[in-house]
Length: 209
Length: 209
DNA sequence: ACCTGAACACCGTTCAAGT
DNA sequence: ACCTGAACACCGTTCAAGT
Image 1 (cartoon, protein in one colour):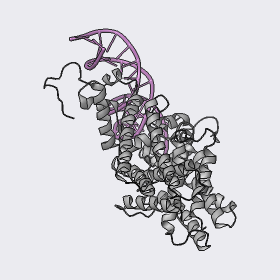
Image 2 (image 1 turned 90 degrees about the horizontal axis):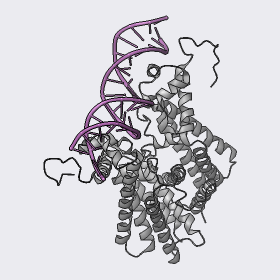
Image 3 (image 1 turned 135 degrees about the vertical axis):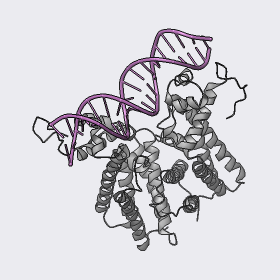
Image 4 (image 1 turned 180 degrees about the horizontal axis):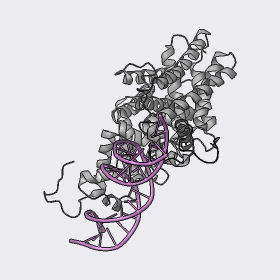
């Protein structure tokens, strides 16, 4: 944000690459991912429109760096949610879902980038693939733990259950992001509650009874 | 597509408004919603870049007209799926889900427009709101019918069940659209099957047992 | 090694002018 | 009433030239 360097801006920027990623993260959060612009980021940092191309081959390359960072933050949030959740396997599953939709709610611009992915080069970025894969493993491991503890309906495939849980969480998060809830009878301001209730309903259906 | 008018193009286009919507629907399907361009649509129709503005106030207005059409097609598909489904309440619910994700699969560009909605002016377009609301009612009515027939677990709120079902279907359709399935262990070419299996798992969980 | 300035090919949008 | 031509303010991207 503020410059740590002296008042007179030198010819070389301190760490333009890092500054561009930060500026893009900020623009995505404030104006939406689609409206992140290389020229605007460059403007904010006081460099020319061509300067970003010294550090990123294209707009997509910058957005991919932003996506890597955003995905790390999401992963951190979900790990924190798990850490706070205690030991009950169902509670841990619930915490994971809440963590996911909660982060999506509070960081709409970043969520848009890592979920829609149309601005990312996933295939060319192993770090991104690994990060996204780790999130899947987190979900699947938590499902397996609940199964092992005998808290889920027996006989279901863990991968399928995890996929269903993820689809529901992603669906809810995106329904909110894409403003579907008004059409679906969720009163304004109650979106978080509705998402939590809906995830709880799914967990209830998944639980042994 | 082909011109019904004589070879010599007259000064006035026959029905430029309609032709622009068709061209945009076509571009959305072929190149993706984000890359629909007023200038490209105009070019294909042999009119100037300014001509579209006689019929649409902005790019968003054109995309909204496209969205109205796409939503009608989705609704038609889902009604057809219901009509083919017979009388079993659970089979009808399943048909609705399959119809939704199937259409999303086959018409990715149009699905993108009506689902992400970021290119649409929903608030200013009652026809669009009504069409989207009708889809919700279709889902909720089908859930209620299954409840009334005693085929679902008793005691659950129909609105919540419908929202869960929609979130799962939307989540799956968008996971596919946004290419999440590779990370989630779904082999290429098996996406449709995985989506159907996952929806069936949800239905199974929802069913009385 | 890193950045600027000017240019190019695109956009959406406006507006005076044509038919 | 409907469309064109030229313009404007934006983009992403390239490239020669500067420090």
